[in-house]
Structures are given as structure tokens and as C-alpha cells.
Length: 209
Image (cartoon, rainbow, N blue to C red; front, side, top):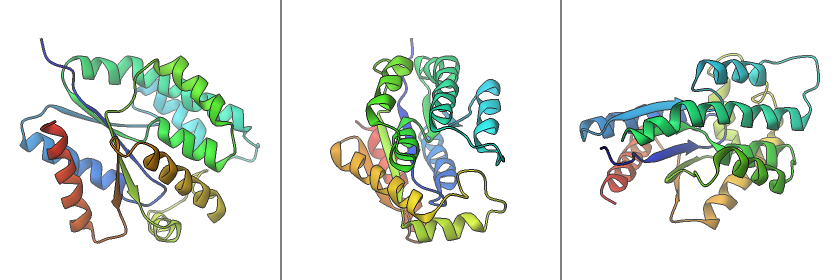
């Protein structure tokens, strides 16, 4: 029977290069003959991707903060129980573009939803499941948003204010400082090669623990 795979999440504000570093991480692990799956939140399964579209599509109707929070966890419940946990049980490593840290940062820090409410849903949906490691790609909001604007049309979240993203970044940094053994902050404002090299080093270290 395969041993359980590792669950590694990539977090950060807009434009910090998560997609690029997920691809980099997958390549590093594959070169080490580690079976790896790359996924994302919200999303990761057909049903969860449908919820993602509901969440990200700009709309005239105001979206209540609790509606947003519950949709995030609805997508997460589907993703976790139908994809992430079975992949981990099969011995595969799961690399995920965002997970519950993003909810604490975006809905908690950004929107002002109570951290206790988020933690209650986290326990309900996840039990004791938490990422083994969190790679926090960090850059100033100004740097990240400048990059995000080059990607094309902005989604509902990307259209938020600078102050919204400053609160998100601060929440990420506070969470990382609270558990330095599990969170790994990477300065994502540096040239791509330097960031990729540091992330590759982290993945190699995770594989030897």
C-alpha cells in the first residue's frame, strides 16, 4: 500500500506567480519520480469549478459576505472529499493553488468575516486535514496588481481596492508568522529564476523530511 502523499498549498495575493510556481514545483517532483497532482481552489472538480465561476464572475447584484464564504467552503468540501483526499490516500502529492489560508486572508482579512466563523467551517469541512506545507509567495500589492493587470480582464476579486489587498497580504503574513515550521515565505518580487530556484529547494527539502 502506498504511503500517504504530501499536501502542499501555494498562497499569495494577486499576481505573485502561483500558477508558474505550481508548474515549477510539479516539474521538480516529477524529476524526483514523485507522483504529483496539480489542482486549484475554488475549483478542482467539475462541480467545484461551477461554483468557482459563480464566485469570480463580475455581477451587478451585490454578493453577501456570508454567501461568498459558504460558496468557498461548498467548493472546498467537494474538492477535498472527492479529489484531494483520494489522491493523497493513493500516495500522490497534491499541489493546490490556494486552500483555506486564502479564505482566512480574503474573506477574513479582506471582507472582515469573523475568523471564528471561518475556523468553524474549516473544522466542519476538513476535520483535522491541513496542508503539510504552505508556500507563501509574497510581493507588495502594487507589484502583484501590476502583474495581474497584464493578464487581461480582471475577475470580481481582482477589481477590489488596494486597501482590500493590503489587508489580505497582512493576514497572510500574520498566519505565516504564527506557524513558521509549516509556512514558507518566498519573496516573489525577485526575478522568476530566483523564485523558481527557492521553490525547487523547498520541494526537495519536503521530500527528504
